[in-house]
Length: 395
Image (cartoon, rainbow, N blue to C red):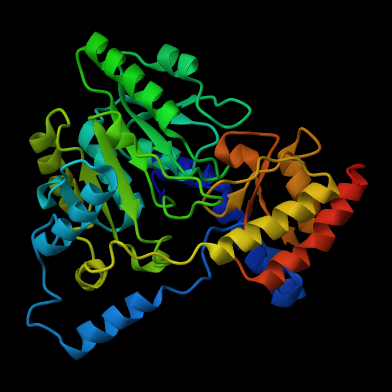
């Protein structure tokens, strides 16, 4: 028995996103990469902004002794202070470097936060559609995922959330802009969410922590503004990365930020540092901590992403596909013309177009498209989308 039962079960339930990506590799080997149109994975092709390259050059030409050694597990004080200063400027909340722990991306940050607050059997609430790996992150630390539905605009149903919160509820994960729907939560919704969580925490006699997963917060379109959950609820823990805003997914650099007024803040911070170490991350990459220190206000341009979104949305809706126009991130989440979303994406796959079924995000009857890819792939996919749309009488 080479793998544990828990690992074998996890592998059997592995992410549809990765499954489609791997099937895409096989198809490219069989038909040629130029004939396969892979819109399955959120792996941005955009290059980091010029400021990042300048900072790399500056660090390479002016190295300081010890810059690649271990530092305290929470990260370099200077980098933590820089992250905190940017958050304070954006939110108006008095974040300091002592509220920040640098991490190996948002995935590590979420695992660290969940491990810190969750006891065996505690529940973590997520909203469908959700990022598929949330299930695995929660299960990693013997928590129980509890799924709450959203409305027809993919906003969480607060009455359903209220009913789902109970004595075992330890945390709630929100993700705005949302992967896979592209929906951006607004201040009025977050204010209502914060009021509900404050009420339920008081009733339960324990904090229900809000884990706000924010890697797409700078990829927002049409003048929509990012709304900060931390402004509406003190027991908010932000997890973020520079995978999207600086186009550095492979560098695995991110952070946890705890609200200065969060209940049991000091104990939680100690827990984050302990879990950062004992989960094996040890610390966020030293060189990347140096590199992003001066780039907290920098981001990739959203102009190209918005152009790709508009091109794909306009073409697909003309073909008859039905969807909400994404407000942020780089995904869209159309309805499938048949109830069986897996059967539908298999038909697209026959046309060498790769997407991800909605059931992989807890929402059957939809499918996810990623448009953080080159124009050739987007344009080349249209013929396959059109053929399948005609097959179902959409156009």
